[in-house]
Image (cartoon, rainbow, N blue to C red; front, side, top):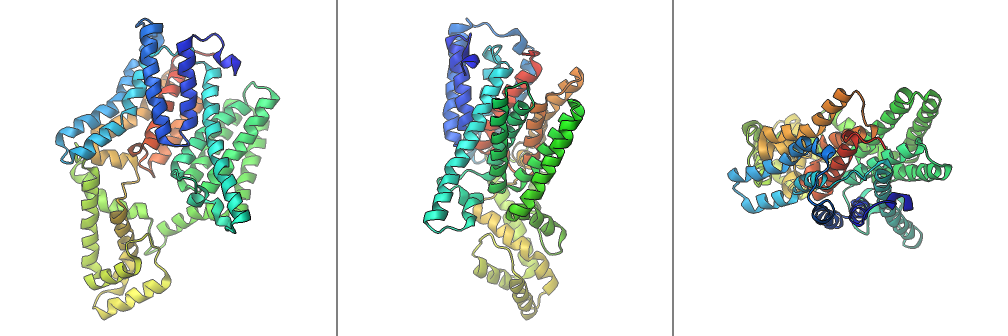
Length: 471
């Protein structure tokens, strides 16, 4: 730890320490991370005034065009207020997305030349530590409940694991995924045996964490990271023996997961089954059918920063009315009586009962059976105010195609620079891959849990990747 802070001036030490606390706070609670975000901004401004004497780092200034593009994500939501009807929600959205502006500003005005690979590792280790502490804290409580309170083994999975307080499993999987990449780089880096052993243990712990919280996107993303790590080790680093060993270990780990944690894998197989089985569906696909007209009608400018929820809910109601026209009001009423708008998977018995009712009320039983799942899921989406569960669609609904283009810039700009420089940063690439993959299934930038995590690490990793500093 002393090496991390050696040679740093007071403001630099304070700034680095805040970044480490910020990284460690992210898994615990977005509000704690937000306090450190504010502290980091204040420290950067004070550092600019008293330490840098208003002098900016020339290497960072060469990248200011990219940070300006990144910051435009916030400005497009501000501009979207001009055609927003629900201004109170709109201003809340603008405030929530301030991280997209604050972090680029910090990484332009603050001289980050002291951030080298060693100090980046320290920040990454803080994130890993935060994830592991969060996991162990809840795991110990779960073990206590099983031993002393008679809880079942279900206590170790998903939301039941996080009884102290719940953090959405998709976001925890992203935090742990980046932590896995930090550990992987340490394991195969030029480190001491003790450091390697520590990171191997941390890696295994994070893998178990992701398996237990059972995020479908998280599990699939972890497999993608495994494949990426194997490709990097085998073909980029040319360590074919290690790559072969690692490939065997990963394959064994996947098989062990299937055998030991079948319920975690079942979340993925059930989704595949629902998408490929007649008269079954995934709730995200049903929601897409509901809000699809909103995107088609407002693709250019969106509905406005604050009107996304209202427009989506109205579209859900329209789709619900369309279903009712097909299945009949009497049958819809019976379904509502059974489920009470809860998230409900129809049983074979329920399907049979609805088909009998269809015959009774002169409706086509096949039509009723076909739309039963859609009706249940759209009811749930209305009752719970469910968003698009896809960040690209969410942005298109809110601020239109320009917002989507700015969103894609986060991925396109680094890709262009990598092609131009003919080299790719493994850590940053895996981070963007993980974020992009999760954005297909979650509205990552609609909550602080996603915004702070992405805006901070994107700014940090972009700087380290393209500033040109090798140490």
